[in-house]
Image: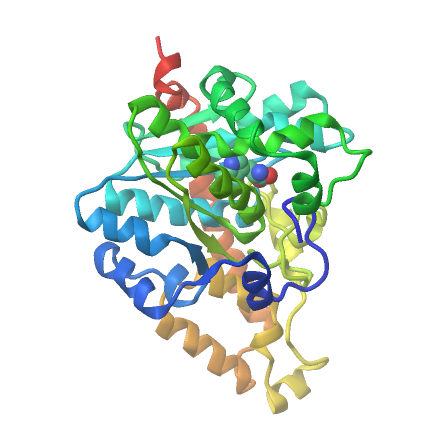
Length: 368
Ligand code: TRP
């Protein structure tokens, strides 16, 4: 796995081992929850791995500040899987009352996607920003950096980073080869830059914490290697699993639109996708009543687990009644459709209002 390709079924423990990230232990998770309140993202190990999370937290306890950094490669409309780490990021921002830098890498998606022209990538950067703002980030503490527009903020940091990285490293880390365009070869330097931006701006070492899905770790592994050479603190990471696909594969991917629910999907599309979802149900109602369903492999159950049933007791109830054959897949899907639609209606309303708020999220150097 690299940030540019997730292949096959994901073994999250192996991934953690391969990448060399640490397990987010129960102790560390409860330390966070004690300060910030309970969240199913931690108790269910959806965020399950980290790098130096303990360090930022201990430093915080001693009065040392930090900021949050995350981002999005705007390649099209966002789906629920994209929103998940951002919702968790908001939980962290509300808890610590810290700054968030959100990077929109329109340049990355332009460079990466064969069929995408720059105008399109920029359009998606704007559209996706509306989704970010709709989640309710604090405008006083949040800035959205659009790479192509605000490049002057990042460029000097990026070239300092780039000078410390050679081609053979990015080949090995991202699976690039001699046919890869040179823009992509440089790109990781730009994704590293926001992790150092506050230190640069303030002229002192300000640590940052990056909440993101684990496939982004390779970028930050490089950023962490380079950091001390440039006098920056190493960024810390808190890493999540992937939001499940409705088709049963375990990443909701933009390349399988039927497995993902987009914020732009019509209500009919949402209902159809959930109706067609892969479940752990039996072939007939009779069999289901007798043997019960199999929530462990069910993508509908995964939806409740990841985002649509935050209460543990309710989730357990659902699991039991599924396993006992009492709850049929049809009912379980209907309930999920209702929950997803109500979430989306609310999100879309906030998303429309976000158009007027855009200006408040522009980086301070670019405000008039
Ligand atoms: N490369 C990421 C993507 O393709 C976008 C991104 C930029 C990002 N900076 C980030 C993601 C920081 C997580 C954290 O989606």
